[in-house]
Image (cartoon, rainbow, N blue to C red; front, side):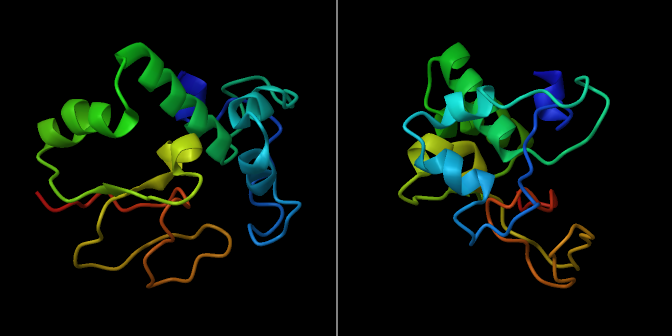
Length: 143
């Protein structure tokens, strides 16, 4: 779990190599798979876990599944009780897209508060709020 959390799982997951709008994008392919979690787990290991950082939304899906299984609760309920409420975060939501049930960890949104967004990741436009589910969320939340 440590390597999934730190995005150093070593899995071959070229999420940013192809636009999300392209049907060949790995995220789009995994979301369309009969079992998105299996599609992540079937990826080859390209680096020793813990050695190379690579943004991996599929790893986030796996973390969400693990949390649901271990807690016995839907992910949104578990995170509300175990994370957001203890931190005093009241303003958050899960996306309700067609794939939200299967990729729910990627659909959590926290609102932006006053201040610029500083994100130098590829494709990000400075000064704009990151796209929800893109994995780039400011942690300055309203409480």
